[in-house]
Every structure is written in C-alpha cells, then in structure tokens.
Length: 273
Image (cartoon, rainbow, N blue to C red):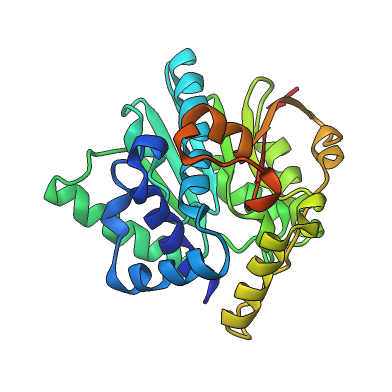
C-alpha cells in the first residue's frame, strides 16, 4: 500500500459513518479498489478503524465550525490534506489552502473542479499547494504559503500526517506554523502517544503497513509524547482528547470499552500565543 492510498481508505472510512463524521461528501471518493482493501484491514488490524477516523473528523468539524463562526470566517490551512472535505461543510466565508504531495494535489484539484461544475459540490475558495514536507525547507514552505493567506485568522490542520514523518520534519512544520500564524490562531494535530506502541493492535498496524508497503514509499512509524506538544515554543495546548473519549460522546452504541484494544489516536488543539 502506498501512502497516497491511505487517503482513499480514510475518506471511505468517513463515508461509512456520516452520522458521526458529519462528512456527507466523503463518498464521492469511494471506489471499488478501496472497497476491496478495507475488509482486509478490518480483519487484520481493527474492526473499529472506520468509526475512529469518523470520530477524529467529527472533532475537527466541530472545533473548526466554532472557530470560523466566532471569527466570521478565516482560512483553513490543511497540511497533508489527502481527500478531506471539511471546506464544503463551512460557508464560503472560509478560504482553504490544501497542501499535499503533487500527485495527490493534482488529482484532488481535478476531481473537485469536476464535481463543482457538475453541481455535486458547492463552490468554495480553495487554493492548492504541492509541498513535500521532507524535502522543502521551512523558508521555502513559508515563502510559498504566506502569499496564499488572504483571510485571517487561520486554523492549521495536521491530521493523519505525523505517523508518516520523522521528528526533524515535525519540528520543521511547527517552525513554519509559528511564522505563518498570529496570536489566537489555532493548530489541530493528531498523533499516537508512545504508550500505544505496547498494544497488540498497534503492532498489527505496523505489520500490515510493512507487509503491504512499496519499498520506495517508506514511512517512519512515529509516535510523539504529550510533553512534546506542551513545550512547543509559541503555542499552548487549550484542549486535548483521544478517540476513545470521543467514542463515549459520539458513538457509545459501538461499545468500545478499552482504549488499549483500538488504534487510539490523541488529538491536541493548540493556540498561537
């Protein structure tokens, strides 16, 4: 499985539980090839993956909706945007900057433009930027993105990305965020905490990726401790939760009883200070 294929898998997960994710457009990305992969993931890794990714989406949907309503608009800067569709859940007073590798960005822009012309999507102010976090320097990333920010404040989203990066690249991204944002702006970020590494379900995830990944599409298997986020210069943590806690709020009927039996990601909301 190449990393870009995970974008299709995650969008399909969100479409499985629209009532939880609040993403009514995710199903546009559904396709037979991805549908064929997912049952194997449920069997070999975890049957809860679709629910958990939908819960993650719900958290950010709620927080961004509140943020942009409070500020009468702004800009969503989505780092590693994949096929997320948040922007279509907000009004046209919210601008969006989508950032990912070139192949994903080119494909997504073509599809979004096509579906907008067909009337399947409402028109939104979207700017696309192809950036490789592992190759571009902070100065290069800042120089390419700063002119694209036309509306303030900003909400930066880093969702489903850190797992595939190393710590040096992670540090680079937060350098970039600090330079792009003003006090009161927010960053939403998702990570696995190191304690997840001891669970059987996490070990199954690594085995699945390692056994299905192309040799030229490697990733880092990164986990990050909570202390890292509480010590980022220029930011303070204003909220943190995890998918297990979210399941008790938005999906109690699914009966997730033990966080050690699921791929439990932790979510941090940080404010620029």
